[in-house]
Image (cartoon, rainbow, N blue to C red):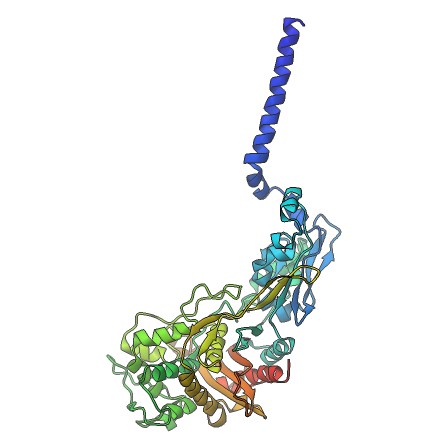
Length: 487
């Protein structure tokens, strides 16, 4: 072979080796970066190449998938989108995933390794498994009752099974249709833009992601703290609360909404039945800042990582307050604010003999053939109260419904305990008040743990009389009835 031929052959060999080296480098060292590059549409196309797994309520899917005829072969659909949007969230080809659609995206899209029969081979072959299913803990009857009760009002409902922490209802109004922007068309973009511009904020999850001053519903926490710390030992005995009660360090009286509270020495039971601010604010100062915040935290306040598995907003009770601020906080004002979920945890913990269970929205995760890949087990969140103290607080709540401001929550053939709340808001309390009700219910004569606990907040209503007893209690009653009737 001539010298020129050898040189040409060597050059070609070097080119081949360089190409092999470059290809190997790209496949080994740059593969992940290229996979994650937004310009790489392969994974996105593959993601939507098959139907997405479903989210189920009561064993029936509330989601589906539809063929698009485009590059993204399938898009998400919702059978009754607005009714379950606070639970499902959305899955959009353009705007991503939220709520259960986001937390369990790998399972629903079929990329979760637990769905594979041969995980290693599927990973090597880049095989996409059929999407798995998420079975929720929701009760259809309870969810429908919550939505019907809320109607056109702005508000939210959270309902929990106290013994297990299973979430039975999670509703937020006004709501939205997550299927309206599930695709990538101009119509989908227009729907998204309309929702973003809507001043009523239909995409805000008021049950999980919005906090409100709880008003007098927080008096359940205050009563629990007073009993647990020995400030009150007999719910029917005089508390020693003065009237008028001038908040410490100020010249300001803590006023009541009814003159029936305007006398010294009210008992804790009477103070709860009448919702006396002066008594409950004074009791909060006797318990003290540290023990008040500890009690609130045992029910879920100040927890920035409360996952159900969707992350809930942090409910707040300040850990640094002076005595007058403690008094206001003890009646659910000042900077105290809570999600409906956490206020449902308060009612559920009292109902469950003082044990607060970790709230859970998902019952199990399954393959497309129904085989479970994970079953959720009940878990204790905190032991907030002793059974004895919990029993005393249940009696207080029962008396509120039987003899006080919670009469609209009565259910024939059931024992119901509850607490109303009307929380002021806005500059100089000029805004429409928030109407609250928290409660639990069980069949009359039963000593078992009540099967349902509920929190309702109405954040805006056209009603002329905005009170927890008038607006929120009837909604809670309908949700509790749905569960007691086997829903």
